[in-house]
Image 1: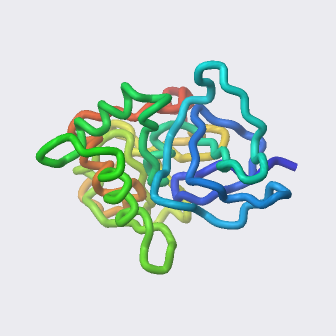
Image 2: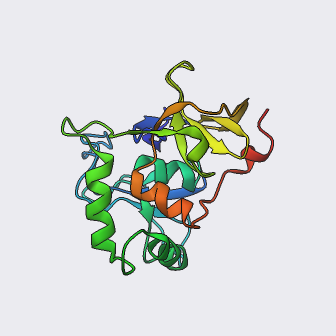
Amino acid sequence: MPRQNRVNPFGEIIATQDRGMFMGNRGVLHDQEGQIQRAWQGKRWLVCVLEFRGRKRTVMSPRHYTELFFLDEATALAAGHRPCAECRRERFNAFRHAWQSEDPPTADEIDNRLHTQRLAPDKKKKVHLANLADLPNGVFVKMADWGENAYLVWNDKLLLWTPAGYSGQKKRPHDVKVVVLTPKSTVEAIRAGYVPEIHPSAMGAR
């Protein structure tokens, strides 16, 4: 049975055999048997590389942070994570310089802001509404009439997210309001020039 350690654009931690391009964490979420007991611990939600300086980890070791995996960076950003300042320092700096504030924020300032934008009072994912035509590439949305699926905004298309990759596309409608999964501040950072890394299947989705 696959472990429950893969994250979808809704921020949910799911079990699937499919892996992804990035790892990350939200703290210690599993118990001694490797079972997920909580959705997050603390405000520092990271997106990390799969390999860094030869470090080796045993996935879901007791009392160590829970290794989470993402299809791509756009998925991780939609779930409420941000680039790690250690293993992805260059990307973290690009993210913070695209952040909409008077001065580039610290990691703690980013984490505090994101924490208010990714969780509603009932601890479920916080979303917001926006005009689809105004959203930049790399943002995730949910369409009211298209079921409970997540779609990546990509040029004039919306690409259907699946754990294995982007499996289909629909023409991007105009002048419609959509539910935006990516936190507001991250959307603005993307709009300001931060380009999320996208899974290669986006180029061939049909």
